[in-house]
Length: 237
Image 1 (tube, rainbow, N blue to C red):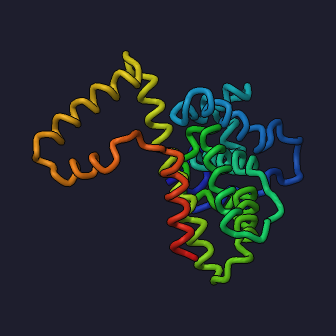
Image 2: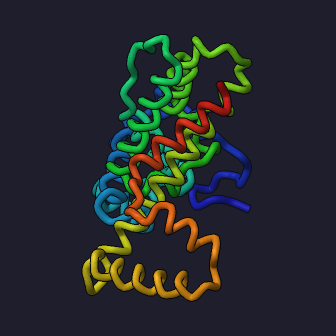
Image 3: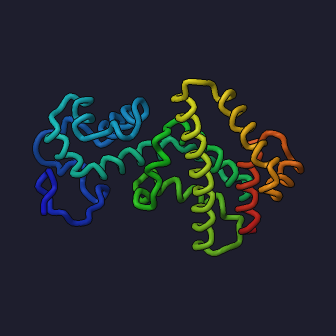
């Protein structure tokens, strides 16, 4: 079984391959060029618009030529993840690991909103690129004041990242759905809230009725995000 570029279908890490061998003419494109083109397409049209053919067209080269640089589409995704990981801001840890992890969470959330396709590619598989490793090392440095094993620290980072990814995925999905509606979000919410009120008032859902009687106000989603992070960090502390 062979790939499009004629390479054997065996596990391979693109970062273990030299970008150029030092022989022959200098390549026309760098991995950074290819990643930037793919990120531009994904930012403008979504992840599904990214293909080897489309990226090749963006660069002005043939599709088969692109396979000489990037053997698989999965490698292209890895280049994209590394490119946006390079946007993470690194700071001198404050010595307050909780404050630093809150900052990690908020900046990761902002990054995902800049690149709304990013949550779809969040996976440990993409965690070994140069920029991803640099950022992981930074997160561990932020936890120097947290007295725990490195295994526990890695779990903490993963859980914070999981909270952020889940929360942003819901935010992005809601925003995309709202844009596709033929009516306003306020109009739909009013209809849904009225229906929910009738169901709760029927007496079939006494616990829900008690819940709404206790707090019928709108949900403060920012406060929910903060509480979720706080509870994760409290669990480790």
